[in-house]
Length: 353
Image (cartoon, rainbow, N blue to C red; front, side):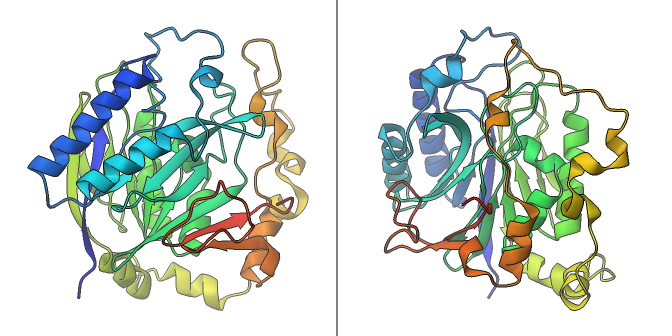
């Protein structure tokens, strides 16, 4: 039996600077989709949509991210969960500014049709120097029962091939990548979405803002790197019925029937990657690079935390128990009450944990 799912990449724009009005718009969009397109079981929205971040033509007040940040779980996630339960759909509402332990994260969420918060992912690779959020320390996947496994990454994460590779290694067959790109490099991002789909033999669902200045161009890409649907510049719903058995076949027989890369990675010794053994700063490419620009005259918030280490991924591949956290429906493996729960959420944690 095929594992088919109707999925919507919502290319929409917020009411800039007004999270309350944006939530009302979001709720209306969800209800419209549920009423008029019942064949689709999952809706994926753009990055920072519910935080109502505008484009370059909208001037947010200083400290806007702190002002609108939410706790997870909290009142906003309760409202999203109630909406998911009302329509009986999987909802990935993009990402929001999350306040946690004195830091602001860019955090993607996923809700089941029962209204449960099943996954939370904090963006590992913020867009420096323009994004001042603190990076996350975990890779996140979750299961849709009877369909397959989904991974979460956000926008600029796609420029770091190790991030989608880690999600695929954890079993993700579909990678959901909420995005907010308002700049001319959207063309390169579409190429990267195709490259990440090909190299990991996975679907990539990549909704960008629509309507706002410099946005659009959302894509859904199949495991062979083919663009199944691509958005224009305005607001629109990109719809596609995807079959996750396509991923299984591509990984079994190889891209174009020629490149079973995962089997080779499984059966060959781990490739030597000196950049992880020695650190990126030790590379010769760094010799002529200047410092990262800093906007606003202060140290970026992202510099305050470390991303997951390569050793964390290597250790988890070798079976080191401390580096894999599996959160089941009956509670949280680490005892924290603020983690995602039902279905399965797996996270590869940084060595510092």
